[in-house]
Amino acid sequence: MSSTNPSGRVAIVTGAGTGIGRAAALALLGDGWHVALAGRRPEPLKAVADESGAAARALAVPTDVADPASVEALFKATVARFGRVDLLFNNAGVGNPPGPFEDWKPEDWKAVVDINLSGMFYCIQHAFRVMKAQTPRGGRIINNGSISASAPRPNSPAYTSTKHAVQGLTKTASLDGRKYDIAVGQIDVGNAMTELASKMAKGVPQANGEIAIEPLMDVSVVGQSVLYMANLPLEANVLFHTVMATKMPFVGRG
Image 1 (tube, one colour):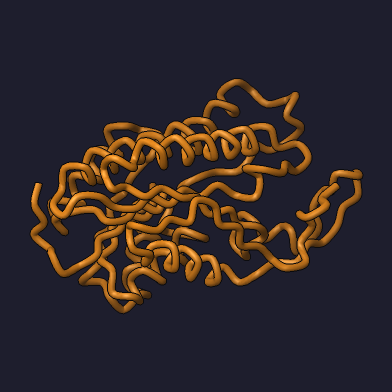
Image 2 (tube, rainbow, N blue to C red; image 1 turned 90 degrees about the vertical axis):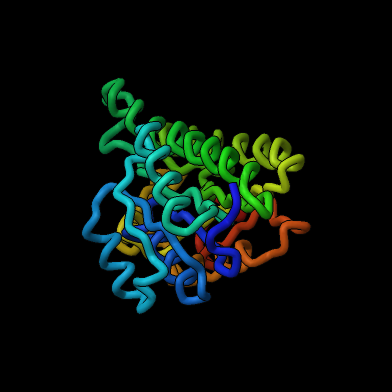
């Protein structure tokens, strides 16, 4: 597989229509990358492409990462349009089901696992297939782990379990990617202002049972962090990168 786009860096961003994915996609497009924007809803993807001012370098691909066939179609569309894949920002994810976890239905649990864990694996799998076969060989994968990959919040077994598992995926993919010149790292984000995190400004449960307002940071900071990791030469890798609101409860949480 040879590149038809030798001078352009090519990225796939999952969950690109909103939140952290949107911020990363805008940062990459602003830096000259060609970006395949993946997400379940086409309208937000088009909005990101238009907002970037670089729509000619953007490709919107409606994708459900929980569906292996949809992930395969995403990678095929990206290679068909841009010739290769240099970066996968493996970002798509969902939060916990509502209500106490003891009241969740099996399908509530499975829906989180299918997207946050299985979907991330499917994307890594296809990225490896493309990156090891292309010329020049190799690429970079950045998984969105979340601070919940190491410290849980109350009533969060689905999200926390999948994010702990993502840490294992990052480590194993980093090891297995060496022979193919594929660098794999993880970004763990704490309290970026997104739709998912906006409730923190109104107060969220703490480990001691209290409800407390938590500080938030601008999500564009996360986009710049992803861009920094993406632009490293393949001889260097950030295995784990934590970016968080300075005053949020994490160090010493609980």
